[in-house]
Length: 128
Image 1 (cartoon, rainbow, N blue to C red):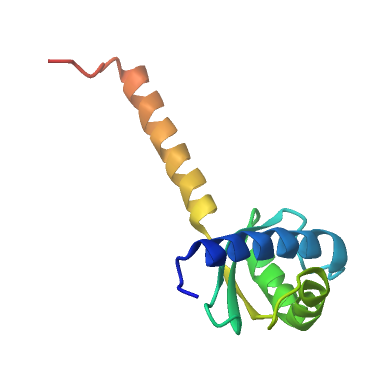
Image 2 (image 1 turned 120 degrees about the vertical axis):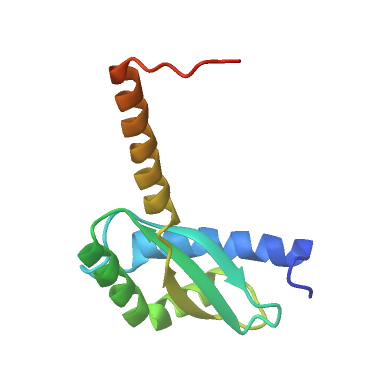
């Protein structure tokens, strides 16, 4: 199975959906922030490993605590994934902190601030 094949794409989506449900409903670790989402999953073509990119809407401490909680519950998450998906091999899950959503929010706020400053100073951009 090639990395970007249709089968691998479907498998990535299915693992992402199931992993989101497991994190939200099954794992009871208090370190895991309630606003945690799985933004992307990459399952290796040999089904041995899986990279799960996790986005946490919170401060730096909440992000680090959530990743620590997920890493400690990785075995349990893998077992739950094995029960819900019928795969030849259940991949070993590696949780990686994804800060792209937070970065996008920060950039959006900066753009809004610059727009407000420009509108407040009366310097309208001229169209030529």
